[in-house]
Length: 442
Ligand code: ATP
Ligand code: MG
Image (cartoon, rainbow, N blue to C red; front, top):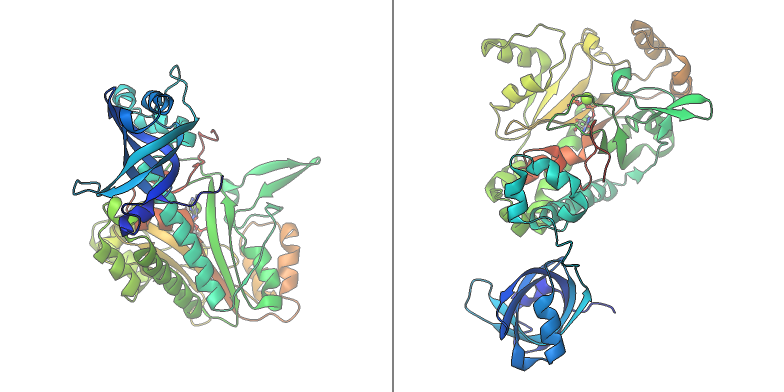
């Protein structure tokens, strides 16, 4: 049953005049009782198959004529170059329906169903997500997403980073208690991890350069265009590194992702209406850096109400991105705005050595990172400033008791990067089964 021919390869012209065997699904079908035009889709593209009553057996013609959209088929025929829009056609000699579609339950995602949904299209498509995945836009997104994942792996592996896994059940928060998912754990409470970071720091003295790509979980109550409750988190941690060193890698990996999709996914980007020059700019430019204080001044000069010390939420990030055509870093947030693991700046301990990378075009934060508080005294002082119980962090403090070194890292939201690079409106477009506060099905 192995498949030898892929529809996408037809364009090369090297099959012209040859007989091939297509395996795929019916994308569209129309015609008369003499000739049927059946567009067949596989994961690589679509092609029109022309089935003439007198060119195939009566039974084959009958079955392919009756087969509904999304039936799976095996079609044999001769490849013919045409000057019509689709370029190539198959003159069918044999056709077998493998998995038919019951006429009582036709494929639900149709143009008329969308019209009927009348404003409820989004929910309709989310209810049918398992079927929506095979439509053109989602398939394109999933291919871009795969290239983004591949690019992140290759960036770190080419630089001798070790891929390292942390547990998903944890006992302490990284990103604050309000977004913790609590899970019953044999009569105790555990939480789903919000980040790999604390456990990565434990391996930092063993591996020195490490990274992961794994799901992180955050109970984000409000539904936004940029938050999922389960998202894919690419994180790195590096020993003997400053905030600047970590930013170099953040810039490096994002540029590498942009370069990779330009090389591997040009036609997919064009399908989505993404301008390739724009992606090229993300791939080639240096990313400017701005301190938090400067960002506050900029915002105030634009009439935004903000006080020094406040964290910058999305509404403010969005305004800041208006001044940039490429991603830009915000650094040196006030110490009071950031959790204990951010290292105070020795030059001015009112600030911490941290950074966020904001994507342009109003997309906002895609990376958060920085230098870690690395000495025992400093970590105890920082934890003491917060109302954080030390017990779940004992192991984290212990790491600092045995040869602490300067180190840092970042977390990159992979789904956010896919959303931005694909030019999508909403983060749920960039992940197969999006999870938010209202939806865990299908
Ligand atoms: P935000 O302020 O936008 O909620 P954050 O400051 O909580 O982000 P970090 O804790 O720094 O984010 O996480 C690192 C990266 O993970 C973020 O830059 C973002 O790209 C991604 N991220 C964080 N929360 C989510 C989420 N709920 N859904 C998708 N991606 C997320
Ligand atoms: Mg958050």
